[in-house]
Length: 392
Image (cartoon, rainbow, N blue to C red; front, top):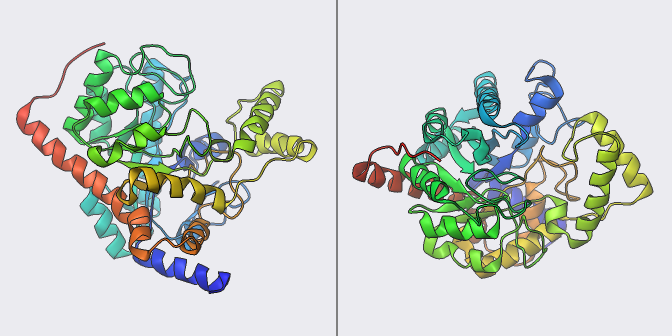
């Protein structure tokens, strides 16, 4: 079969079982670039010059559901972090209202299925970093009431109750209050997201949770030894837990050669007085100039497929998914340049012998199932206990 035929087959598969993507940072990009002015950055128009995401490319990529990240950086703390998170939530709500013909609000697994039948993209929210709740379980419940359906326990820095993968050990994984956060997430029906957290935090969360967990955008540490990735002993626990690990596309997490290059590129950004995660047009000009002098190692769809092959082998086909991290990274793999690229990954997996039923689990049904299972656990937990008022 030719490459063109394989790509046609991938698109046909995605028409029936579209991608549920675990993590897209469009809301933060809209904040940075246009302060949420959707007339200035109208995703109904071609935004390929400045964003990885617009409606036409979501459609071309076969995306059927998107967890929009309501991320705020961990440099924001206390009530400032909470307020910024509320602004991010409001931005997603504005997107859904403005583009209602394409985006459907989704709070449940049933909502996701309804959106698919309607031909709209189910739009869910995920909070990225436990600092967003300011050590308050009442705030956690408020975020759930506003539609947040997962929370990543940390971002790049530790918080008061959980250790991050990219910070020094603090509480040694989860503190007693951190375990209470996990239990309250179970009770509300908010998925526990273990991307960004230290391996000790992953293990503590798995020891604590009554519901399946997710990794919204993490790949395999055995394939690329980066602390943001998932160790095999944790992947091995997903079948018993019922969780889903959603492979990310960020080159510095998936391609070993990109790890050292990214460290140099980050240092260059700081030398220019910019945050290393800045992806605004001005920041990207600095990146491109650096790349011209120090060529960037380029990941491909095959690089991502190597991670998915390994994750399937260790965790099983029922426990993997996709979390691209578009608009949250300066660089993307060749062939997965933006949200239109998912068919290229599916075509690569077809070439490697993945079956259509297995690919349908990867793209759609695993993610829908994990949310449905979390909803079932929440109903059971709410019948057993009242909201927790624990404090740190």
